[in-house]
Structure formats: C-alpha cells, structure tokens
Image (cartoon, rainbow, N blue to C red; front, side):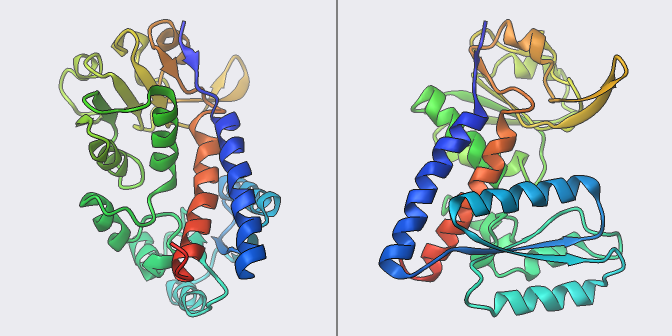
Length: 288
C-alpha cells in the first residue's frame, strides 16, 4: 500500500516558514509583501479560488488587494488596470484569476503583467527563463509538485519521470523542473500511442491531463511515486465529488507514494503562490 503524500500538511509547513520570513521582512526592512488579485466575472470556481488565496494571505501577513470586475469588462479596461498595478511600487505581485470572459485574450493579459510581478509564473519571460534553467517566478502547481517529490524522494537524479499532459501551466514547466533535477523526462498526453506502457516505465508519474481517473492503476510501475494534478468534479452515487486524473484506489495498491485528490497538489499550489509573492517582493527590493 502506497504512502499518502499529505499536501495539506506540507503546505502548512511551507506557510509557517513563509510567515516567519514575512515577519523578518517587516521587522528588518519595513516590507510587507503585497499581492493584487483581479477577478473578472462571476465564475463560481474562480470565486472560491480567490477566496482561498486571500484567506491564506491574511494568515501569513501578506497584504492582498482585491479587484472584482464585471463580466462585461473589456480587454482595454483590464489592461489599463494591470498597467496601473505594474506602476504601483507598493504592489509586488499581480494575479489575474483565469479563466477570463471570452472577449478578453488570456495571452494578452498574462503578458501585460510585469514579469517581475507575475506570481503565477505564466509570463513569456518567466517561461523562457525556466526553459533555459534560470528560474525566476515558476508556475505554482509544478513548483509545489517538485517540492513534494524532493521531500519524498530526496535526490531525483537518474529517475525516469513521465509527465502526462502538455499544458503551458503544468505539463511543460513540470518537465523543465524535472530536467533541471537530472531526471530523464518523457512528456506524454492523451494521444500518445501505448500510453499505458509509457506510464509503466515511470519512477515518477505526474498526471496532468484533465480527465477523471484517466490513468489506470495497472499503468503504475510498482513502487513509483505518483503526483496527481487533476481536479475533476464528477457525479457518483447521486453525489458530487472531486477526483483526480488517476484511479486512486487501484493506483494506491501499486505505487510507492501517491498524492490524494483533494488534499494533495491543490494546497501546495496556493502555498507556492505565497512563496512566489514573497520572492517577488524580495527581488524588487534587492534582497536576494
């Protein structure tokens, strides 16, 4: 039976360290990290995510400023707000909660944010830095996944990592982080031929394909470490519940360690957003 990787406990430990670091910044440098969170529209899931992020900021001592815009907001109006926040020296991080309404281009918004304040790590300059091994602000979900892998396995050198999913938000940056840690990396996806055989080769299997229970239990190499990034809401036995991209019950029988859903990668994503906000504040004030 696999070891369950407790992402919630790991995130709490990381946040405790960040809270101490923030107190030190306040005491020694009169610096309180500040993040601006922008929510456009009424997407229910986005509202929950923003509420959780703001709550975590308050717990750690990070100042958060919320900007809630209507669903009818134009791209020009949103870009004007981002420009104002870029030029506000008291704001260290800017997060525009995705998705945005259809009249707004995601890429234009992401790349309008100053790369120095891009705490999501999605700006093309931060993506480019990661691709050549010069980490600036790294996407939060892959960063949290890497931290848990390092805590569970120690040195990752020489391990074969298979990442199922090729998104710009998770799959590609995850692969780059694993390469930096001397893994042999295979990027697979839903159209990969003989995907089950590819997955069975993995010492580290990262599932980020966005399909509930897509990765079957017998696709997992015995003793492998499984990071399940998926968060899928399904109806089962008349009840709504969250499941990952991995068939957890079956995979748990074969894996050496596995993240649950919920309670695995999700809490680490928010913790790493806090980490990036503190990092951005320190960089902007020449403290690292």
